Each structure stands twice: as C-alpha cells, then as structure tokens.
Image (cartoon, rainbow, N blue to C red; front, side, top):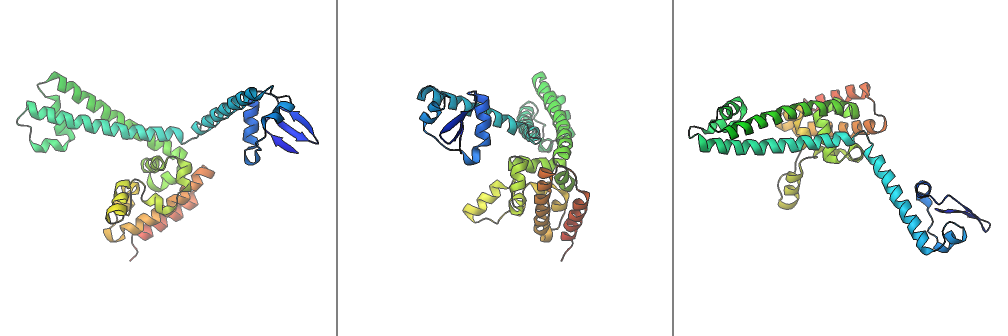
Length: 281
C-alpha cells in the first residue's frame, strides 16, 4: 500500500481523505517520517483535486496549517514564558543602567560638587538626584527607582517560575541562575541536549571567542560563576568545582525535561559531590 498525503493507493484503488487543510495537515504530520512525493496526477485520479493548480493550492494551505499548529505547540512549552521573563529582566537591567549613567552625567552638570564617589551608585546617588534643582531630573530619578523596584519583583517571579519549570536545576544553583542558563541555551530542550562542557561556559561568549581568535586563556565558567559554590571557591579549585557543577546541571536539565519533578535523592548526591570538589586537594 502506498500512503500519500491525499490518500492511500492499494491494488490500483485509491481511498482519498477529506480535502480539508486541517485534515491534510494532520496527515502530513502523521506521515512525516515516510512521506512519499507523488505526481499531482495521482491526486487528480484519486478525486482530491481537479488540476495542478488545485493540487498546489491545497498543499500550500495544508502546509500553512501544519506550520501554525507546530508554532502553537512550541509556544505552549512550560519554559517559553520563563525565557521571555529572563530576556525582559535583562532588558530592564540594560535600560536602568543606561538611564542611571545619563542621570549621573546630568547631575554632574548641575552640581559641581557632585564628586566621583556618587558615581558608585546606591542610596547616596539616589538621594542626590532626588534633591536635584532640576524637576525634570528628579522625575527621571523617580522613574529609575520605579524601574529598579519592578526589576526586583521580576527577579523574584523569575526565580519562582524557574522552581516550577526546572525544579532540579533550580535546586542545584537557584532559580535565577537556572533561568539564565536556560535563556542562554535558548530553552530547556536545548539545555538538556548540551554536554556539560558547553553548560560550563554558557554566557562566556566574549571570553570564548577571545580564546579561539586571540589565544587568550580559555574560560572556566560563564553564568554558573554567579552561583556561590563557584565564585566562593578558591582559585586553585574553582575550575574543578565549575566542571563538577556543570556535569550535575546537565543531568538535572534532562530530569527536568523528561520528568519535570524534583528528584531529592539525585540532588543530595549532586550537592555532596559538588561540595567534595571544593575541598579536594
């Protein structure tokens, strides 16, 4: 029996399917691994289309319907919203930093006594801008503070959401770092497919290219440096801790993808191995 997107042919007899784009799209998805590419005249003899133009039109509408269904499936993944949240958080950081830098330069023009120490940020900087003689600058300062508060709330929500979507990865490195790893990879599926060595340097793109092109030292860590076990480790063992942590994260990401539930036994073993890496001689 020969199976085509428009029907099945067996013993010279054709059994057509409904000439509906949605039905054809479902059949295209079903036959994807073994889809045959027939001459359009077979579909005509089967009674599905009247001519070549009708064949092309029906197949085109069906392919669009299939693409629409696949996009909807991709966007329904549990990690899709988290990915957008992380990217929004990064954009917010960028906007706040740019506005703060501009506000500092503005205040320096208005206040010659605005010394270098205020450029370090913090409450002193915010207070100085709030007391600025310029109403416009005071308004900018208020907006910067508002954005900073929104960023804090968004960070908490990202961490909470990561605990749900990536329970094992979050248990190892915290929700925020786990979410950033996932965003750097491009999604939970992409992260779960990555080897440990790639996960170890996720987020160290600039350093990695410098190593490849200019002979700079190879990076030992990327985003995972934000985790306390890595950045608190001594320099002599930091690389080893990063390698062990990345190896456990690779396993955790796969558990999150295929099970979606916290595995306490795995977490306990992984934590013990990571801790041991930080004290091994």
